[in-house]
Length: 196
Image (cartoon, rainbow, N blue to C red; front, top):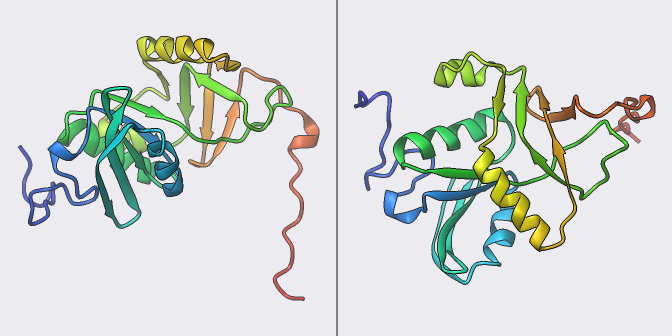
């Protein structure tokens, strides 16, 4: 297994960062970035089984339409989501993770609040290589899971866009290389001076 220095456990046996016992989470996870969205997503649950908070990590497990599911907030950036996904897949036996949230775009073809279903992601970060030995810069999403989300969106009359590739830069900027950028969107307004 792991040397004690490689996997830190809390006194109750939970993994250090998430502070969760295996029975406190589902094998189906919804990940959001903003901790406040955890409560928003959980407000749609039929029932709440448990709520665990540790540091900036928040988890609520419950049922939705009779199925056990957990929603978790991972915070900002690749390192934070990396801790979450690594521990969930390797220590808790999680089968499916669906990441929902917001992202920016350089394309006028997408508007604020558009729903996007990503089929492949590309990152210039070395996180996947260092943490998991993954050498590919581009990873495909789970097609079966995407098909289920597509069918659910159609059933609910939610218009969505497929992106063939999502480009992640510096862990916070999101650009699609399948949509053409527009010059006016590249300019940033100057930051206001903190001194009056």
